[in-house]
Length: 123
Image 1: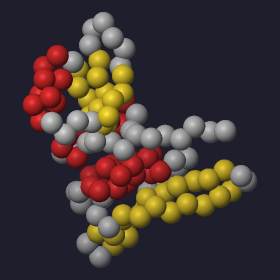
Image 2: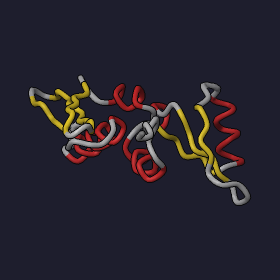
Image 3: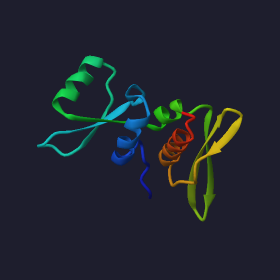
Image 4: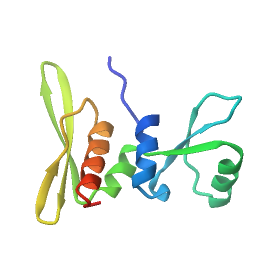
């Protein structure tokens, strides 16, 4: 059985850090020179986040809900081919529909849509 991706992976998170508001992230990766990268749920307490940023390498990451919340009028589309499900993210912006490529999971589809909208300067 395939594993379900719950949040952006590390390379995606590093790219989204440059594009999205860090406040839109609802999770984060933490690491320091002694510990491998770990994933934790995000915290709403701003002081605690600042403490983490001082003590650890703090890299925000986004869940599916957080990604969908930053895409204008977004919805997910899916198809099933040969017992495998594929996803794409669709967004309506400025009288146009935009679609991501078909992906193995909805997280990757939303990530691609955010990159596409950013390149079009529509995000």
